[in-house]
Image 1: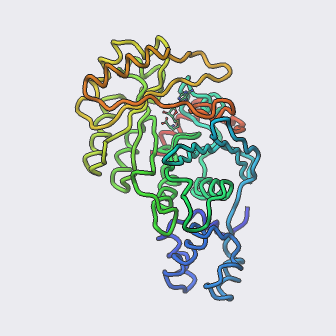
Image 2 (image 1 turned 90 degrees about the vertical axis):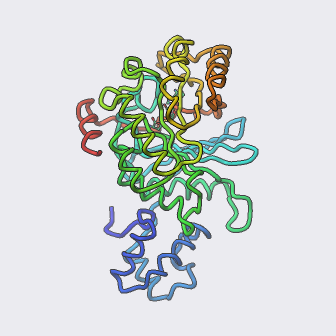
Image 3 (image 1 turned 30 degrees about the horizontal axis):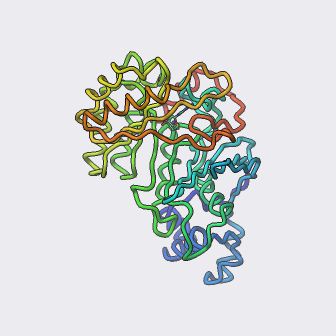
Length: 366
Ligand code: SAH
């Protein structure tokens, strides 16, 4: 650890304040961000429109902290997974998913996860700590570099960012929010609010808070249509039940006039939540909240006790909901051969926490 400021930690207003404290004008923040995020220049000496004196000062008081690349693997379908290790030894995973018309980068918000959803391998790995803003932002920076995204005027290989990797982003609200600001800032990665998606298991007070400060796209890991079932597969539901969750989502969509509403994620677990009765209950539950439903085939991992629903069951589930007027997609599973699919990300987390402590942290953070 140094006492230098990691500039990846600072969204534009904070960077302006940082320069102001040093007697510099706010436009310095824009200059620096352009070098950093548009040109992807990380050497202060190469930032040629910044005076030499200021460059020297930057070298003394600021830094750009990069992780080590532990794994860099490409799957047969082009999906690419990285394991990044940060200075304190925690490692996390980021996944790039190329498609015909876009490229999605799935990033992590925590080293591990404290929420203990039994169908998710990150939960099995345990929880270690929240990532800092800089550690979240640098995943995108690194991915662009490693994908060889050209510096200017060339295809933008990363068109979408989803906070769907390791961790529960809303438990790490104060670090995640500034990162999303950098994603959406024209002087940062310049993505529109429709292309930055935060996926949450449903931390209700944080969804209310989020509504006041951002309008990014919201995805919610619903996975069950009743409290009874959801308590079992998304245990945070015991604290924040479905009624409160739906109310928070509705308020988010209304406040932000979010195009298309919430994305409801629903993992298809054989004989657990995939029966016709569940589809009926789901249709009833979601009838008043705008959104689209994304059915996710369950991806198994060593030690997982669940199985994925059959193709036929998923199609029937989808058909029923479509007939009820919902937009329903079945997510394509990508990167299976390199363990890069949803719920298969584990990094290398040394679980240092006890379950009680984990939950207390969840509570304290919102
Ligand atoms: N904690 C956040 C984001 C991380 S998980 C959340 O819960 O939304 C991203 C998505 O992958 C979530 O919808 C999660 O429920 C789903 N997922 C987790 N494990 C999975 C698995 N084994 N197979 C398929 N989807 C899984």
